[in-house]
Length: 114
Image (cartoon, rainbow, N blue to C red; front, side, top):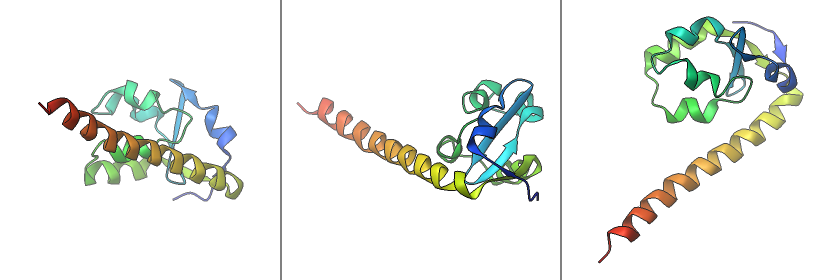
């Protein structure tokens, strides 16, 4: 485990094939070397490059093996100043996900009524 601290701004610069970083919870991962190994394809990770990927990671049903593997790519944590902003972003993403999960069944139930 690393003691390196990164700002959200610094992480956001690593959003390309040559350097791909993501944030999951408060941890920063350099997944550049993992892009081509990702079972779901590199594009899924690239969509989150340089950003908070917590919701996407949690909502995609990763196995315990995947969670162990990700530890190999951890390069540090986001700084304390960035944690407040990151937590706020995570809360908004989680709220958006919850709204979608509620809306979709409601919509489906409405369309099935006769």
